Length: 373
Image (cartoon, rainbow, N blue to C red; front, side):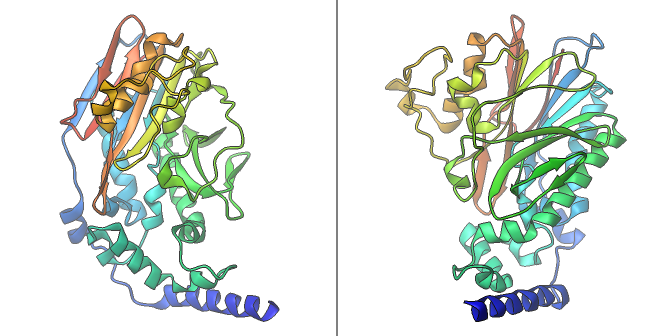
């Protein structure tokens, strides 16, 4: 056992040296211009500016090449913030919400050029398995896994995530609910995120005027494509207070917004950064899911079997539940994109009680939804 650990350590060190010094052709700016996609952005706003603040939901459309380096990731997100600014949506009382998993594909940072051209996840895994062969020997005899890659690249991912959202929130003088990212057992200590161990979690953080707030949102109900991560230990969702805004927030990541028990708080505003993989499996007949949070039985009907994944989310997600809630405002914003032949789907929506509910039209891949408090 001691000999195996020693050999594993040696192979790991050699692997790191190999990655550092081997010549890898990275994605050039010319290549990136061919791969990036900038669909038309749908713009909508509810209410009027009473100088009390506002929430801006960003439905981003992302592709793997957007994560090829830190600068491209930053500029892609800044594109949406600039569009919000041009429409007069930004002030020092604005909260900008990015979707769930906006940071997770940072695991693709600085990979070889050919990876970003792949059309199947299987081919991507083959490339990563070849490039990170040394992870096969790290602490276990198991073969290469995506989980190991996330852990290996977690520090770089975290640093880029933190720098990007810190800089954006500082430069534009706003607060950002920064979507989510897979990180190993993250913990907040003051204004820093510390990571350790091998338990990946789906977590989201909030940045305000360049600083990380002591607010830590963790996902409880994991989807089937997150099965190699660890869920939150409890489903007791905290109601948050955000500086400069005299209101209470409930933040639910994606699947957590489907389950009725998560709406027991009396938060004035419910926000759900979400990401729905087109092949995601959800037991819609579960009695814990319905469009009426006060129901303790399934309201799934025979007609519902004919609904698409997007339509089911519209019915049983926040848009469908809102009329039964005591909350004044809701926003559910989805990640859209195409990753190696797979799509993320969903239509972002927002609502203001007794005023209006607005949903991004299905023919738009990107949107900015603004709602005044």
